[in-house]
Image (tube, rainbow, N blue to C red; front, side, top):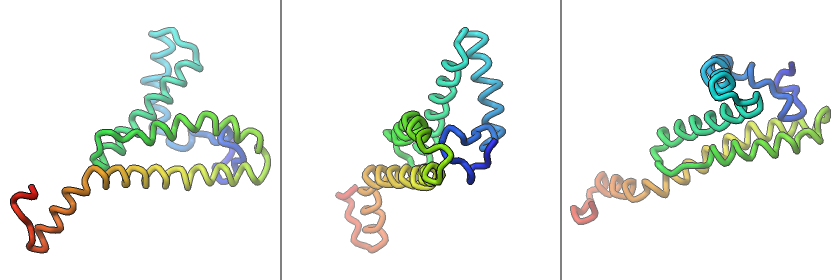
Length: 143
């Protein structure tokens, strides 16, 4: 098992150590029941956990930014799959470690910025009304 700061490819990142309570919950309440009750293979059950995780991350950001049509996390997580395969070409090299850290730092930052931009597009009209109200030039017809 590698520590994240030493990883040289995204497939080497040990997600089980990244967030132990969530991993345990996913294994016990999603992964094993998918295999037991729905007779899915381990790979298919892992895909179900991955998609469910993407949707829960999406819900978290949608609630936090109060945007009903945010979809950036799902797209970002789905883009992780080809990025993991691409990062295998750099495994064991410093470039791979740089790719891992760029993914963690820039990926999360980019997602937050996209959500903020989406929120600003949704809520900018209300923000203008809010500022106009406190400046004193609020007009009832603007509402």
